[in-house]
Length: 82
View 1 (tube, helix red, strand yellow):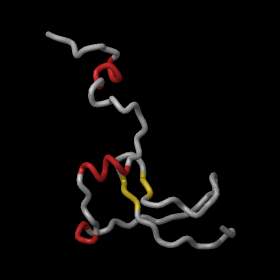
View 2 (cartoon, one colour; view 1 turned 180 degrees about the horizontal axis):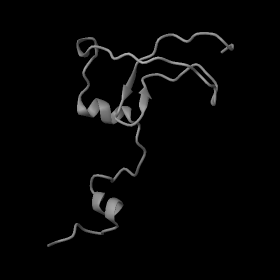
View 3 (cartoon, helix red, strand yellow; view 1 turned 90 degrees about the vertical axis):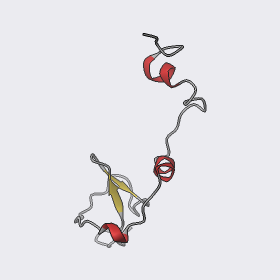
View 4 (cartoon, helix red, strand yellow; view 1 turned 90 degrees about the horizontal axis):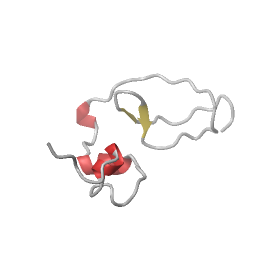
């Protein structure tokens, strides 16, 4: 993109820490940009299910995460017993 050229309006989601883009920006890495922020009324936003949000995070991990969660989080072979 040429310096001074304006990109189209983009929508992002603020997750409480960072702004997450719905689409990639049309700039090269480390390009300084200026932006302004305005909230979008909830009625104009499509609500996503938990599964849609989880899939949009594009998490990478082993295929057995759900079966071996304790091992991956805490190093346990089996869940601890009280």
